[in-house]
Length: 196
Image (cartoon, rainbow, N blue to C red; front, side, top):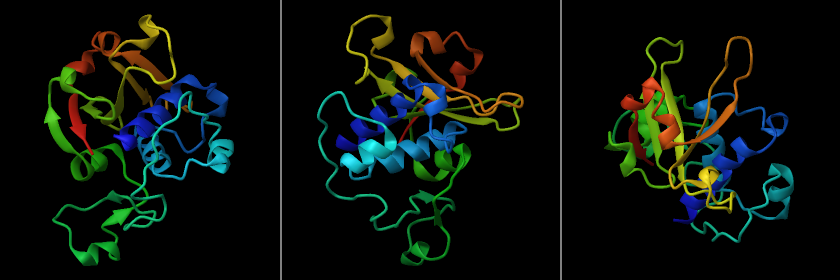
């Protein structure tokens, strides 16, 4: 539960902060997932708060089992090849620091439901946009915001966040909306809920 709280808090913050302060490494939807995942596992000490510019609005429980990059996989958290775990995977490139949305979906999550209303905070919604150069797309299901304290439309129980990826020659942008808003987009029917 602590991981999910940190993961959603970090992912959502990217959509709430000024665009010019979003870390440059977040340049598409998969980059947002990787960034939030790694940072959820970090030691959230004053140095991390200073470097990330993320000061949580409330105290969150510490993730005690692992602290990135000191994990059994080191900094290479993401499986990039299929197969059951073998000890040799730790040294043969089966795990990497980079994974695109398709690889994250195929080798790093498990399918829960095509019903997006089954999503829990920290779940990832995947869908395909066949007309695009990068057809696999992902979003983080936040649920109720840890940042927005009011009970108005900005803090629905079904908030999602994502990065659009490049738009034309531009960097793209972070988006934050409710599932109700998302469902007016044609791609919503193809969304599926997955868990790490």
